[in-house]
Amino acid sequence: MNRFEYRQNALYCEDIKLEDLAKKYGTPLYVYSKNMIIDKFKAADAAFGSTDHIICYAMKANANLEILRLMASLGAGGDVVSGGELYLALKAGIPANKIVYASVGKTDEEIQFALESGIRAFNIESEPELQVVNDIARQLGKKAPAAIRVNPDIDVHGHPYISTGKSINKFGIDIEAAFDVFKKADSMSGIDVMGVHCHIGSQILNLDYFDATAKKLFDFVTKLKNSGINIHHIDIGGGLGVHYPDVIPEFSEEKTEVPPPAQLAEIVLNVLKPLNCEIVFEPGRSIVGEAGLLIGRVNYVKFSRDTKFIVVDAGMNDLIRPSLYQAYHQIVPLNKTDGKLERADVVGPICETGDFLAKDRNLPPVQRGDYLAMMTAGAYGYALASNYNSRPRPAEIWVDGDRDELIREREKVEDWTR
Ligand SMILES: Cc1ncc(COP(=O)(O)O)c(C=O)c1O
Image (cartoon, rainbow, N blue to C red):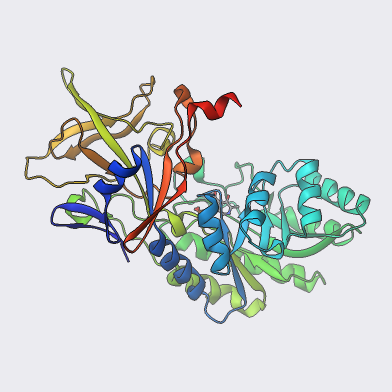
C-alpha cells in the first residue's frame, strides 16, 4: 500500500504533512514510511508461505540502524557485503546465524570477523576466495559455513551497472565451472558446504529472468545432490524491482508493471520446491525503495536559452542514482498548485554538469522556498550519499502514523575535523 498521497493538495507521508517535516528538520531530508517498510517486508516473507525460507534483507540498499533494528524485530536476517555491514547488522540485533555474506573482495580481517561472529553462510565468489576462507577457518579451528555463488550467465537487460548475472560480470563462478569448485570445497576441512547462491541483478521487473535462473539452479543442484554433495539451501539473491515513474498517479508520465513478491516466489518455488532445500531471498530495493523520498527546497529558478533549471538544495551527493545510472525518480511538489506544467531540469548545487535529479521533466511552476519530493528514494539513496563538494549528508526521518522520529542526524561539517 502506498503511504504517500495528497490530502487537500498537500503531500503526506502516512498522517504527517511533509512540508511540516521539511520545516521542522530542514532540507535536504530523507523521509521514510515505517509502516510501508513493514508492509513490504511482510509481503516478501508471506510470499514464500510455509516453504522453509529466510528473508535476508540486503542492507546495502539502506543501512540506517533504525531500519535494521526494525528488520531484526520482524525476524529478518541480513545480506551483508562488508565487515562494516556485518558490524551494523549485529549491532542492530540481527542474529549472526541469520546473516549471509557476499562480496568479491572479502579481506582476511573481514573473513575472520565473520567466522568469529558465527554467520549463517559465506557466499563465496571465487576459487581463490574459497582457499583463503578455508585457510583462515582452519587457523581458527573452525569450519566456515559456505554457499558458492554461481554466475548463470543470464542477461536481465537492465542498466549494465546493476546487472550481475552475466559471465562478463565480476560476480560468482561460471555455472559451467562451478561443479568442480563445489567438489573441491566439499573436500576441504575448513569448509562446510551449505548451499548455492545466485544474484542476477537489480530492478528486475520481468520475472522470466528469475524463472530461467531457477531452472539453471534446479539442474545444477540436482547434479550436486546426485554426486553426493548435500545442499541445505538455495539463495536466490534479491533484485525485484519497484515503481519509479508512477508512485504518485497524478504526476505520472509513464506506467510500469511491478510484480509482487508473491509472483516471484510462485515462479521460483514452482521450479525449486522439489529439491526440498531452504530458500534464502535477499531483497533490498523492494523492501525500502518505495518507502522513502528525498525532499529538496527550491533555491533558484533560472532560464538559459533553451532550458528551465529548477535548482534545489539536494544534489548528486544526496541522491546519485540519476547521475550514476540515468535513473528516473518521479518528482512532485509538496504543495500542488494549478499552474500549467512546464518542461524543466531539476538540478542540485554541485559543481558538475552531471549533477541533476531530473532532465526535461513536466513540472508545475515553482518558486524559491517551494519544496519538491524525489520519490522512491528509500533504496540506494542515502546509502550512496557522499560528502562531495564538502556537503554534509542529509538527516533521515521516519513516520509512523502521526508521529515522526529522527533516525539519523544531519551531518555537520564539524564531524569531519575529528
Ligand atoms: C548479492 C546481492 N544480494 C541482494 C542484492 C539486493 O538487490 P535488490 O536491492 O535489487 O533487491 C544485491 C544488490 O545488488 C546483491 O548484490
